[in-house]
Length: 312
View 1 (tube, helix red, strand yellow):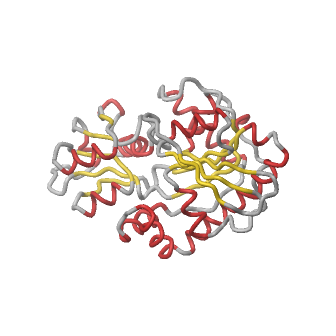
View 2: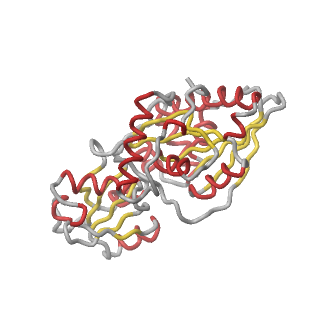
View 3: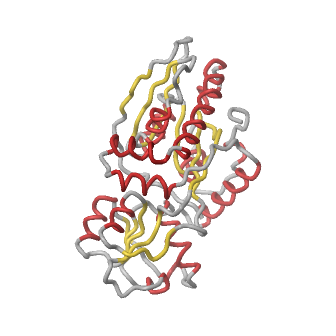
């Protein structure tokens, strides 16, 4: 089981130009909540790149996918099943790299004084999830209840955006809350009790994709190959310099340093991976499962969604 981030609510994008040496190529790198850009800036990964880059930042996935479809961005990054869903719906891009991370930052919380002591006791309780059906927290919730011996029909969760859910949880209006960092860590710092995190029951995978339009341009394709190598270096730098990156991340996001470090440490980013047969097989399993649950509109052969020649 894996997860989907919220696929509702649009948001405006901001383009931020960077100024490496200009060889006549400009890559527009689609980003969410500056996650990739912060790592790249902190690590100086794009210093000396022989092309220009622009960062197109989006607060939610929907406008990022629209930008990829229109050709406004050359790359996008999102959770695996969102990228697979977009491909099934005909979005014009190919998945070119993947990255795994820990699921310790995704979990199910109850208030400190709750009488709920196990996942099995969630049956019939008021559960709120802060991702869309099939999203990260939703996937952890269903994987956890199945592991505890419950059936899917034993729970009927509601879905609520993160800020609203956090307020409702803090006000005692929610019996159990499935969410992810940083709100998971925020609530825990306030005394909430963790019933179960996603470790061991959820594979957290991010897919990196490049637009068909960019891939068809030889100069951009060459620049993309270099760019994904630099993104890989940025990920490696943040893992190797967690304390320094947490301080930078806190300054840029207005998080407290402790919250930033907890969030980044629990995420546990792993190296950027080329596309392998194993990654494609895992993506096929996700697609089959989500199609069976009605989250995806249909089953599809995922092989054509990938291009293993760009990175690695």
